[in-house]
Figure 1 (cartoon, protein in one colour):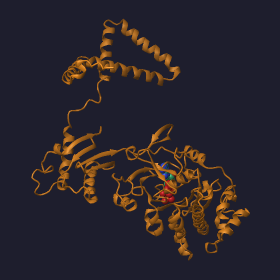
Figure 2 (cartoon, protein in one colour; figure 1 turned 30 degrees about the vertical axis):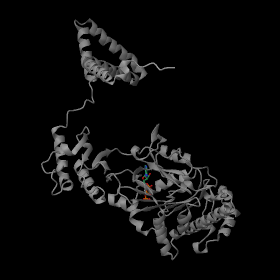
Figure 3 (cartoon, rainbow, N blue to C red; figure 1 turned 90 degrees about the vertical axis):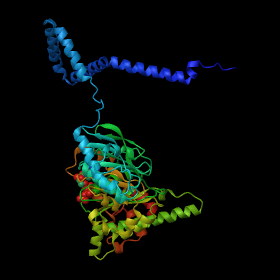
Figure 4 (cartoon, rainbow, N blue to C red; figure 1 turned 90 degrees about the horizontal axis):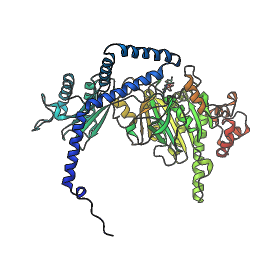
Length: 550
Ligand SMILES: Nc1ncnc2c1ncn2[C@@H]1O[C@H](COP(=O)(O)OP(=O)(O)OP(=O)(O)O)[C@@H](O)[C@H]1O
């Protein structure tokens, strides 16, 4: 069937454009003519909404008197000569004021803002100019408007956003050159805020923006993650592609998580957390342990000896919580053997053409807080550094579903064993840290200016060679700490697996193996564990661990 041609007006592009132009002009004129009307109607709407809000906020017992006083006023106005007219005029005036366009763009920056931008421009001249440049973009007394293509100020007049162009010969590929520019912009734009710098090397363009604080009101909770994923904390929405629904305060919000993937396919199967004292290293380990218990077993070595993991003792899935040297050595020795056993077992299965046995697939987490304290104790007692026993799980744990997480203070980080440094490709640094300190831990500087004043649990994370991300760890305090608020305590308690061993009976490897150098061989430990006397592994896990141990 022959197709009917379209009407000429729809095919003739010139007349189409002309009609569009007429429509646009008509719309512009209409909006000019009706502008006061639009403003007044918007204002009336806003006043009505404010009135409704006020009414809703008024307690029920006060609504009657309020209604009567409003009605009395209306009556008084109605009977006064010219009252209704004056009331209508006042109402229109109020509506026009309430309905004014608050976002109307101001025409250009004010004097103070111009001065700021000029100052900023002058400060950049030494870095963005070169002798012999015939038409310098940056020169003393030059025009900042040529270089700064976009800018924005907050209500208090502080710079909030700046997009600037720089000459193509600026060495933007070198960290040092970038750092210098970032430092200048940071200092001139006002310290105490966190700035983000986005370098567009192809367009010779830099965008500075002020970052808001990361939310600190996300508490411990069951996060909606896939198996093998652990939430380290939350970051900026632009930095990651995914969000998770989380309970934030009273409401459920979508928050952008820093997700760490562990297990056989992970390229960064072990984590190192460094931080200043009191910045939340232990809290992050507790948060990880609670998530790990959802699908795996956890061993905790608490070098601080302050009992901050006591809430985990005797819980289903917790194989031990050790704070003494002897216990730590025995536990880690078992973990090293267990890693080896899993590897051998999985390898045999593979050779026989079978899938890896179930008991090699359940994730095992070795969580170590402040190992250097134990290393110090071991040196004093003439024993081996417990960190040496981490070598096996660190080197081969990825293939054996064994994950090691170590937290240490920055000041003692140089005492960490080489294996710990070499095999922990997922890194977190917590607390106030300079760009150089962040770089020394994460291997790359942050794209933001670290601030001196940060809440506990705030820091930076980097997974392998990925970008450096701002991080805020979910609040996961020790529920036995008297200072913990009730809501946070309940949130942590709700995540703890059921207790399978009474607290008094949940003892440690230390009792099973009195001294590391006398540490019972794997089989003997198993016998002890199975014998049910001083169980290294809490009762309910015995069945689970019997497999690996026997
Ligand atoms: N993410 C967080 N959100 C809220 N509070 C936190 C967070 N992390 C830590 N805190 C609080 O900060 C304090 C110190 O935390 P934590 O013990 O985890 O720090 P730490 O770095 O292990 O300290 P230390 O080095 O002294 O052992 C605690 O009161 C804890 O509740």
